[in-house]
Length: 443
Image (cartoon, rainbow, N blue to C red; front, top):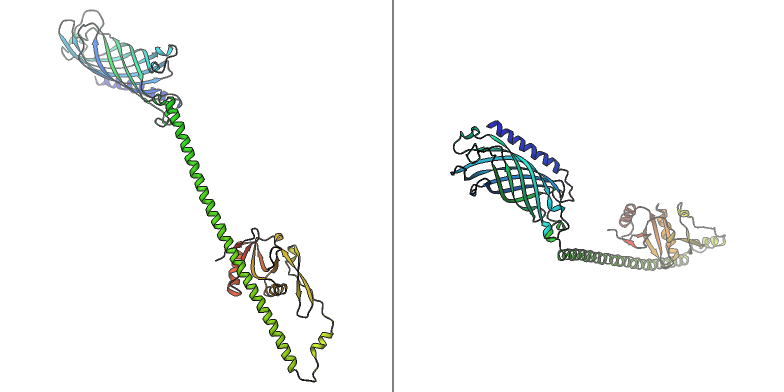
């Protein structure tokens, strides 16, 4: 008995494993090919007039190759009861394991409408390995609890509910190799019985299939109203995303405009401060010149008589020609046609050319001073050159001010120079961006 059960379990496991291996080749774009079936019902003895009253249950595994053909494995077990040929009642139990080939006969019919396409009728043919257990008269026929080979012919119907569930029902006709199922033997005819059942089939979908989100595969959702609803939903989502993006763009544009306004305000304040500083420098220069004239007049007045007038002698000598000596980097910049007029201490008039801002190759200019008077601009430039700075005069046709600048191509280097000059020369030193023409804020 143990060897027999072990054999049956091994056969059933092997059959199910084969079906599972076949199921791995399922195309994810098609409907599910593999399904698990649960059934229950009542068996009936075809040779007897009285109905059966003992239930049975079963489990099946089906693999569909296409809409016409499928293979299935089944395991059933339960009771069998009724009136025997001798006139008495019997009640015995059985188990059976087998396989069947199924042909969908409705798939050969012409085109059906949506309602009738949900119904599919199958004609099945197979064989089972059956164990039958006598509850009474265990010595009957000498075959108590022995296996029998059973042929199976069945008709079953499936109703498509959705992509995952089918309703099923049908009847399987079994033809045995024994004459003693009803505890009566010796009549020379093999017993026949039918298993009538109803049940559910649960379809196993591939892992990458969108079972719930892919609504188009569910027949209950596959109608015109639902399609229109989904299209409207997609349009609403798209318009909502567009409104959000436009709103974010407006906010960013407003922030950019606000920043530009603040930068322009800072540039205006810087230029205003520079202009005021230039006016103050002009006043100081005039005061210095006036003090120098007063001191010279006072010296001439108090000069002892009889001494040689050195100044007059010097005035009689021819003036020494003095030219503006450019720095070692001035040749790198194209000169602005606008010339500055500079009067040297010895009275010589000198023309000094400025640098055109549009022709500067560097990215930044450190502005150390702005002047209206040409002479003040040249004096300030020479002062920074004497201190070792590569200073230049930056002229602009749009402004009357001449800026004394130190060029730099690196932002961090320029910021460092600004910080150094603010601490050693003047707190009003600032940085100009050559490319944009705007001031750069340095804390």
